[in-house]
Every structure is written in structure tokens, then in C-alpha cells.
Length: 482
Length: 152
Image 1 (tube, each protein chain N blue to C red):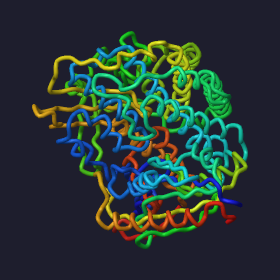
Image 2 (cartoon, helix red, strand yellow):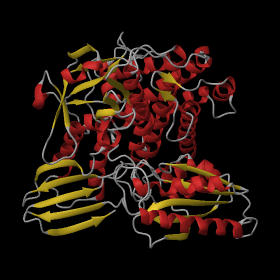
Image 3 (cartoon, rainbow over the protein chains, first blue to last red):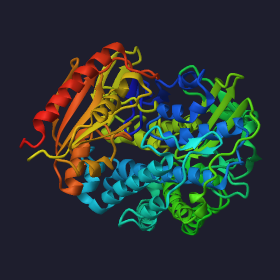
């Protein structure tokens, strides 16, 4: 009897994701798919609104990384007001960088301590009652405290730069609306331990060391879980450095050959296509030069460390060299190595925050620059989960006439499907019983990409996890609730 | 425990219609300026909120609900160590458990679950949610007035 397994929604990611795994009458996987049940409406939301509202409005789309949407929209509006993408004042550019790297710090910290460390510390088959952040607190209290305080520090940086805890207003078309006061700066640099930049660097290093120690003891698991070759895409600085805030587009293939290099992202439509498939609301982006079948790519921490040439901060660069040496300088295509890459980025973010805080430009008074008004602009940023595209056209009445967003999770659509399929084929296919540990491995594969699916509708009662098994006639034969 | 410091914490996304009930109610509480009552709101709770909660004697989480009996439900929360559905957010009971384990503080906590109906992308509450919001606000103001300074 053929069966279909449905996981809906996936836990530890947002919104309405669903995994379906189809089995034939011998329990062999015939198809797996990672669906997005509800995803449309972003672009419609901002159409008709004045362009200057966009950086604030778009934050309402997502409760996970609102700063990314805020800054990507602001960068697009910089172009529209004739200031961008590289014409901001030093104060404006560095304030935005501080905001963004603060977000990276808190987002990467949350992902590791809250979502990943339970799997590492307790194992993928551990009782879910233990395999969570509370379990981490009970057994590794210091680690949990560090996770909370890294999050807190990043959130405080965002508050100081964006002006508000949510729906920040710090970035405006052509610049920012505030600088960083001496008092704010000193609180981050010299604040009472542990909430200061130097402590954050040490804790980020500690988290990275924890992962490396785990990797050393579990190489087969970490290296052998869902590896597959892919292209990789990200922004890099003009000189090839890792840069989360601004740069040019670069893509490499699984062997490290450059597919795109030094591409101005205002022209992204020439290089990036979006395929629609009937079974998913989420599009499948691809590199046009390689075509739909071969042009799909990864974005995010793993992709960023595969595309960049170096990391411009000393401790993260040292770790980057170890990371690169592990694959002899070739791109790293191992799914769980995304956690390794993410923690190197965590360390880099902490270092950059400290360096920015010591930069006197943050106290500058020139906040906004404007030039010749343009009808169209594209803003790109490396969000925690990967490259985020915002593209707008504005009419003569200053109203947004067209918006196109490609969010990081959309860019990772095909890789997430491939990772789920790897688990289905290697962990579930032809097994007599579907266990919680097997289903957790599906989630482990997806969690490596840290996806943000439906952006923050969370009301009580909307987040059950249901596993349903159907026979080939779509009759329900088993149902599990987590 | 004597209740001297109360936190009213709204949860939700105002860009998702009735999902914004929590933040909206908090904005109304702030406008009232109730003594010894602090307020906060965010899209969702997360691990750092354990630290925030540790500073209070009582916390009222205000959230939209798809299933509560209208106009709202009000119930006391107990810390819950088991996290059945872990996402980027944390449920209030898990935040309370973290507060206890990390900071050795156990504030009394309640959930004010206000019934909502519309969850699409968009601004503003549905008409019925507005009615429920008014009822919830009146209840909360009365509850805070009765609770402050008392031993609960």
C-alpha cells in the first residue's frame, strides 16, 4: 500500500511549511517535497504606498529578520532618491552597518543556541522533552546564559541604531535619522560585564569552539549528513571580502569556478531568473547562464564562505582559513557545515561591532544625502539567512508601482528540497517504522538553512505539528501530533 | 508573593491584521500610564525575554488567539519545561521556565488571549476584534487595579 507522510508545519521554523514524503507499497520513498503553504502578498502590501514609507512598512512582513527588510528597502530607496547605493555619508553607512551586524549577531546566536545546540548536545534521537533550550539550561547553564546575552546585546544594538525595538525607523531613503551618542557607544564598549563587545567576541569564539569540538568527535555525522554539490551565491565586497551589508554579486559552482563575478546588483534580473512550479507557492530562483535545471544555488552562511576570498577581521579570518583548508580550498557542500560557517560569521559580526563602535564617524552629524530622483531601485543585503533582494519602481506621484522581493528562504528553496530528499531517501525509505528521530532529521536538514517561511503570524492555535500518513488512494491510515 | 511590579507584554505582528491585537492593547495601556505597570511588545517572545520577565513580580502576556472564546480568555500560566513546538519564537510558558532556571525568579504570569479572526497581510483589526480588544482592555485595567500591592 502506498503511503504519504505529511509534516505540517515544520517545527522550529516560522509559519506554514509542510513536508510531504510519498511512499510506495513497500515503504520506498518515491517523492519528497518541501511546500510553502502560504507565502504570497508581500509585493501587493506595499503597492500604492509612498516610497519613503517602504523601509518601515516592509518590516511588518517578518518578525524574524525585520532589520534585513528595513535595510534592503532603504538601500533600494537610496537609489531612487539619487544617493545610492554607494553615496551615503560615512555616518549613515556605518550606522546601518552597525544595525545590520547587530542583527547578524542576535540572529546567528539564536539559531545556534536555541535551535541547533540541542541536537548537538543531546543527539538527534534524544527525547524532544529534553532536546530543546530548556534542556540546554538544565545541563549547560553557562552556555544558555551566553545565548540569552548574545541575543540581548544584538537587540540592544538594533534598538540604539534603528530607534525602536520593532518597526525601526533608523534607515531612511538616502541615509539614517540618528547617529550613535557617546553614551550609547560607551555602554556597548565599556558596559558592565557581560554586556560589552569584548565579552561578545569571547562568547562567539566559545560557541564556535564548541561546534568544532563536536565536529571532531562526530565527523561522520556532520560531514555525511545531506551533502550535495551546488552553486553558491552572495554579495562580496569589491575586493572579494565577506561583507553582509554591501557589495557586488558573485556566484561560484560546486568546484569553485566563478559563474558570476563583480556583478552590479542593479542588473540582477539579467542574471537571476525565478521558476514557478505548480506544487509550491514559493518560486525557484536560478542563475540564467546555467538554466533552470542546473542554475539553482545556495545562499546563506555556507554560500558566503564559499564565495568570498577572505574575512576582514582577524579572528574570523583565522577560523575561515581552517574552514577552507578542510575542503582544500574548494567550496564546502556539506549541509551541516552551514552551522560551522554561521558561527564563524557570528565571530566576525562581534569583531565588526567592536571596531565600528570605536569609529568616530558614528557620532557624525551628516546623516542624509540626496541626488537626482530616479524611477527604479534595487537594494540587496546579506540577511542572516542569505541574499535578500528588494526591487521597486516608483511612479511620478511618489507611489510604489511595482515591488519584487526575493527573500533568502526563496533563494534556498531548491537546496532545502534537496536536503529533505536526501533524508527521505537515506533515513526513511524502506524503514518499517517512522520514528520521531527520523522526522527530526527532516527538520535538521531544513534547520541548517534557518528558513523563515511565512513571516510571523503566530497566534495561539496556529502552530500544530501534524504528521499524517496516507495510502495511495489518499486514505488516512496514520496520524501523529507532536 | 506581593505584586508590586507588573509587566504587560503584547505579542504579535501588526502587519497581520488581528495578529496585532497584543501590541495594540499594549499601546492603549501605555496611553493610560498606569503606575507601577511597565509594558513591552514584540513580534514574538524569545529567549532574552526570560531576563525581562525576571525583573517583575507579575507578567501578563497579551496575545491574539484563533481559538479563545470571545471576547477573550484569561488564565494563569505555569512554567513549562517541555517545548513541543519550538520555532524562532518561544511560548510564554517556556519563557517562564527559562526565567526560573536561568535567573531563579518565578513571577506569577497570566495569558490574556484575545480572540482574533483575520490573519492576512494588512493593517488594522477586524471589527469584531476591535470589540474584543475593548473588552480585554477594560478587564485588564480592572485586574491591574485589584492586583497591585496585593499578595496573590
